[in-house]
Structures are given as structure tokens and as C-alpha cells.
Length: 99
Image 1: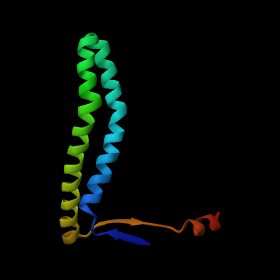
Image 2: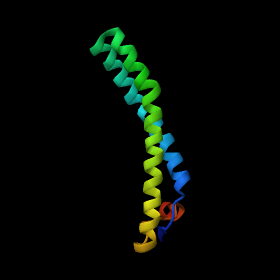
Image 3: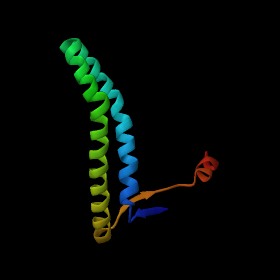
Image 4: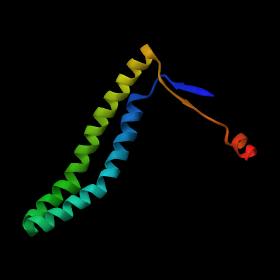
């Protein structure tokens, strides 16, 4: 069965992606913080730590929210004119019965 996504919620899509990308950025921020301590000494490391662990994830989340909202809005415009993304689904109980 083919299904077509013709509309996505702009606000909800932006919110979910912003939270996901913010959480996914935290391991990267920890790595950057550790590199700052190693490369710049203790004084520079503290400044990098504050920037990467507090400010950068918030900025990253905000920018992701804005751009994900823009992409969702643009998707809705394009999907109206050329159709939405299509994907196929299968009932797993039917697939399991065949094996």
C-alpha cells in the first residue's frame, strides 16, 4: 500500500527536531569541551566549557527550530503542487505468516 504525506505540522515538526538535535549535540559539546581543556589550558578550557555546554546547545536548538519550521512550511508548499513524499507499508502480521 502506498501512502503520501501531503502536509506536516510546521510547529510540531520544528519543536520535535529542535529537541532531538539539541540532545544529539550534547556528546559533541562534551568532546569540544574536553578538547578545549587539553588544548588551551585550564583558563581557556573554562571559557570553552561555558560556551559549549550552556550556550551552544541553546543556539543549536533555536536555529534547528527555525530552519525545521522553514523546511516544513516549504514542504507543504511543494507537496501541494507536485505531491508529497510517498512510502510503502506492509502489515507485519502478513509478512510473518509468509515466513
